[in-house]
Structures are given as C-alpha cells and as structure tokens.
Length: 172
Image 1 (spheres, one colour):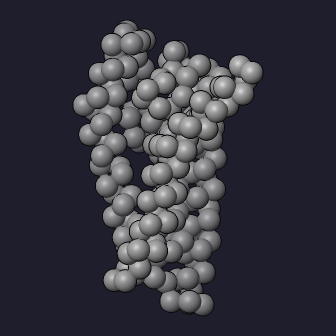
Image 2: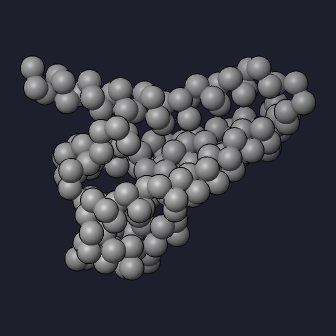
C-alpha cells in the first residue's frame, strides 16, 4: 500500500506541474491559437529538419525530466511539487552539472514541440516558462532551500550554476 501511495504522490506532482506546462498548454496553443501561428511548409526541408530536431529535443527533455523525478523520489525522498518537497538535498546525477535540470528538461520538451511544429507561439510559451521559473527560483525556491538545507545548499550554489551546466561534474 505504501508503494502505491508513493507512486500516486509522484504521478500527481508530474501531472499537475510538468504535465500541464509541457502537455496541456502546448496542446491548447497548437489547437486554439493555430490562426496566425507559423508552421513549417509540409514536405519542405524545414519541415523534415524541424520534425527530426523536435523529436530529438523532446526525447532528451523527457529523459532528463524522468531522471530528475526519479532522483527526487529515491535520493530526495520527496517530489518536484512545492507542497511535497524533497527531504534531502539532491546533488547527484544531472544536479552535479546544474542546479535546475528538471526545468531544463521541461524547457527542452517545450523547445522540441516548438521546433517540431515550427510554432513561434510555442516558442513564446517556452520563453514565458523560462522567465517565470527564473523569477520563481531566485525569489522563492532558492531562499527556501537555503532555509531548509543551510550551509550544504550554500556550498552547492557556490559550486554549481543555476542554468548553464558545468563542464565537469561537481563532487561534494
């Protein structure tokens, strides 16, 4: 029963956060905002290149996001949701290269969808997502992590960049 509850807890967080951001909103933009949006010309070289590039970006973003959710559960003993945060600081895997790989993964999903569709409106949604998350992380998330994890998080922020990955993995 405990395992089922843990799985449901993570599914809820994933469906409500990245599921809406990378699934529901882009689907709405593509359908409701179709008029006036750009699209690749069918069977043009841009269409094929956009399809291939979009699939690669979506696959990479999905892989990174799933990896991060798994680390939050296994190592952090929590979820990506602010109402059910990790109990331990996660500084393994992609978190050794940058502090916010989950957001990077979702941004890659959004970028892949914009490239795949050739949609400037999806590209605008990606920019809004990235900007909103930057503001949120600086104003809310990082001060909260400093309060929860203290010196360990301060050392981590001094060594690992927020958005641009390190060339080599950080080891604490």
